[in-house]
Length: 315
Image: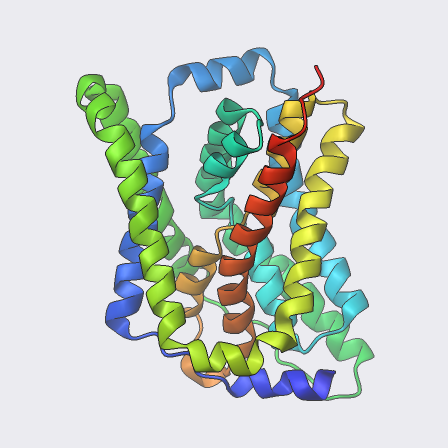
């Protein structure tokens, strides 16, 4: 299996500078729309009943990267595939988690709050988790593999921090400011921006996938199982951890979805930033993992939302 996966290292996805620029704009636009949905009462409710928010934040920010590390140790893919899985796990919740949570009869206010929390914290935790778990994996791989040494990650953490702040931090801060300062205008533009930004993002993802369709057709079978298992792990962690702490069932659904829907668009944006990952590093496996994650978590999210939408919520 590892021999066939090594082919991925040399894959070059056709993401032009203009296409990546539009992907970054779409991602920032989506996060701006998410921020417009955030209200002060979301946070006051969390202060009054913080358990579910704390459980959800721990599940996504700490448990998912840690369990992903254990998964890649057990599954033993090639280093670039493993690092792609770790990078996706280090990213915050995906932009469609609020919609999926609503469809699944989850706690939408909790979903929005967790998205805001994980996105804000990602400015620090995405670079930290990727550097920490990525280097831990490389040390383990070098100590136990006969396939040859892999060099320690030499990522410019400040550049990654800066990129995450520009793509997530600035749009969220701007959205929060406008929602607070201009509530009447926000009420008028909120739904159109949310729907428009989601459509814009989906169109960008589809166009980027269309430009790389032959690559996906040739290589997707190599990463399909890894993404399937990691996504199932993420959903399972969220539901099991929240069940362990006896969170309400609506909250368990939301925490599972928030942990299982990852911002793989951010992973791609980071991956194709030449100041963070120089092209000569040959990280095709990372790119294919992140790109397929962007497709699969929508499919799995809609499937689990459809299943839960047909099941009554136990109080």
